[in-house]
Length: 209
Image (spheres, rainbow, N blue to C red):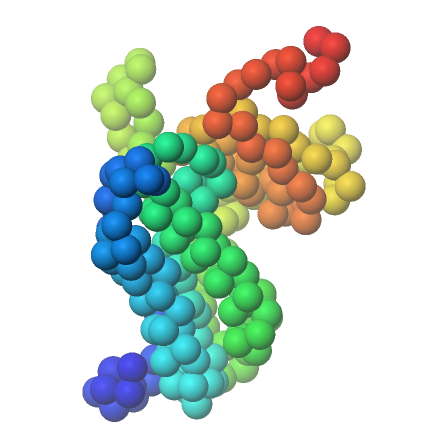
């Protein structure tokens, strides 16, 4: 981190993207297997974040981005260490966010950046690259910004009168646009809760249906 700052004058963004997995049943994992996965996926992000923080603080702030996984939410028999590492990464990131970054939201960070002349066009930057399935035509990639995504989410929530006290049940995969918009973006917009289902079971989702 110090070498990067010395070479470029500052450190603005840290991306923790290292990842590996070993597919075995939990009882088949050796200590070496477990340490290899956890050290690569979780410990590396923790250590890099610790090292980046003082360098970013000197430069006036920065952003730390960790690549998680949906398996941090869903259990499965294989790759237990991978799932544990991604669950841990989610919690480490949540712990770092309020304690290590002075500006706690993108909007506050944008206002501070404008004041120092370093403008971040956050709301109109590409936030999602979505590939269509090509059901009725050739597959194509669509670039969505935060503005275009929320242009769908905000009127949807208003139409149904949703607010932070509501709980959204989402059975669509998060890799599908329906799951992403209303299982991820809508709860973020509302500041509400979401229940995610990896397998659709109407009786548990809608008792009495």
